[in-house]
Length: 94
Image (tube, rainbow, N blue to C red):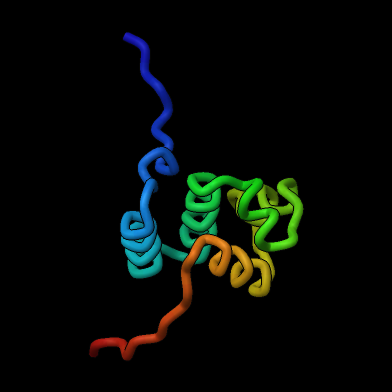
């Protein structure tokens, strides 16, 4: 039996799915999980498109959004804007 590697980016095919995925990771994950999730979303949309919209090169994006990376906040904000996301703060429940 042949298996293929699961790729979450293959399932992030609309804005609602992307938002749900990222919100879940933000709620349940750590910093590295959030960076990886943003990378998955960028792959789903297309790294070339994200690179064009952010003004960053594709290799820089892959490096910034790879496992173990620690991208600058400005980079994360550019990518979030390019993927159609925004940060919203809600009061935490007690």
